[in-house]
Image 1 (cartoon, helix red, strand yellow):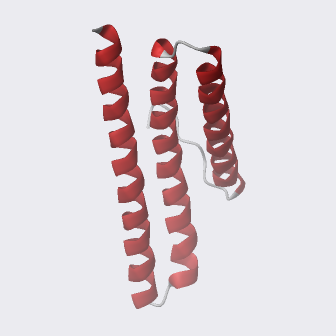
Image 2 (cartoon, rainbow, N blue to C red; image 1 turned 120 degrees about the vertical axis):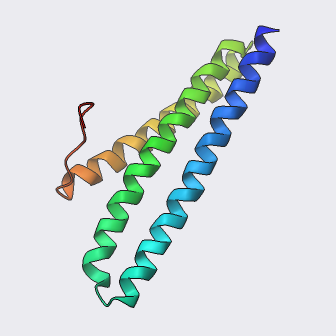
Length: 113
């Protein structure tokens, strides 16, 4: 019963992350197309890329949360190792995107904002 509830919760969180990723890509594409139409493509592309990166980091954090929940019901060490690897890869991606945001002069937001 608990395992089924966790499985449903994991699927729900993964679905949220998938929708967030798709919406982020669509929003970035709209921003870039809009910038191209207004002839300010170069300046606006950087802004769109940074916003996309922020959104993707948040989406990856949702996926990591889902992976953590999966480990609660994962019975074997092999499956836990695979999930651990996935978490490490997603965490490295999140950190590299966050680094890119800071490097481009985009300050990391605090909980107060």
